[in-house]
Image 1 (spheres, rainbow, N blue to C red):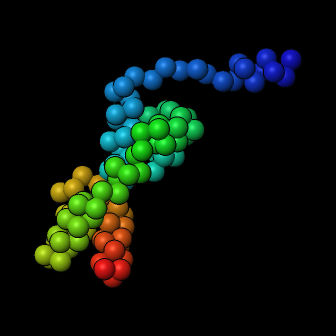
Image 2 (image 1 turned 30 degrees about the vertical axis):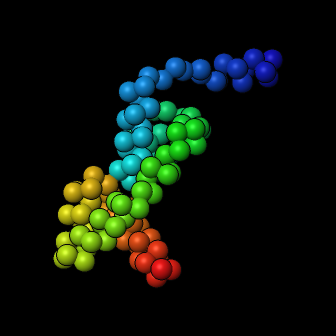
Length: 107
């Protein structure tokens, strides 16, 4: 009986390519998987699977975007304006700038 109850709780949903693309877009804008899960009503585990199979982390960590954020900040722009320009959150802008500064120190 316990196995049947667990089976009933599981929902095998088929998600569309549009839903997957929307989740990726939100991720690239700086949202975290739990936030995307709540917004889109998609289990976090499903999003984690999409993240690893689609190599989302590599897309997000594009060095050119970090350099652009750093250059804009050096040009006097505020993080809020940079975030609007890049289509990411202000926290993501801050992370990009810090990561670029670290990379710059290494070289």
